[in-house]
Image (tube, rainbow, N blue to C red; front, side, top):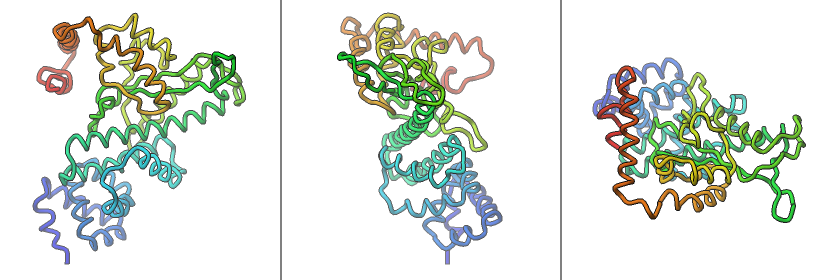
Length: 346
């Protein structure tokens, strides 16, 4: 006989756990009976519901996650990108009647539930948790890119480039992550800072339903579709909030630039703080070779040999002063950017 009181008593919010269980019994009586027969899973579910109202709501909306959690308890603790992609592919197939952007939001919530359980049970370090949350974002971006690429190819055909011998070769695309995702330090509610780079200018093959367009137009549309897939809100929220302000020329810049244009921007135009942003950059999805090429070529500007530590710190200070000035003009208190906020702590 499960002693429910002994499970609930030590939770941070016993009342919330109790209310969740009552509501779960009302909405899903069959799942509730199964849950009450498994003390280990019951303990996990109530802990999740007590620590996180969002996860409690997720479990009420999707009771099948309880059965999934039961299976995952005996599996490997950490999942790499390939494992998550495989799991996401199965999830998408099983939920094919749901819009893709809703699938991604729902999958992310399910995976965060698993990661959060490891977190509150202290089965992993903070570094391991943020690393896996970042891997989850990589997998979702990769999946979204594959979906978007297929859609664009169906419309315009494959984007092509011309090599040194005059032969037509496929042009490729890379999603570069910056900020917390770039340094694999994403937390549960972080937005994701992205930069889109494609390998070569040229034209598409025109084999799709809408004929030929330039590679620039193709890849801008591809970026727009990826952003919509991961960022479009639904009744269950979006997978991620996407921030593109760190791309070349910020809000007024094209969504996607060729490799040559991007390198030239950071070589000739970028301000010091923009180059510093690239310290925390990496390839999250797409062709990693593009990022490797890009990183190698901009490294002399990011880690300039003629810049000393004092100058680098002064650039950081200037950036912070600019943020402070904007906050003076803003209304209310910004917990992230305001005085004593998250940015200052970091």
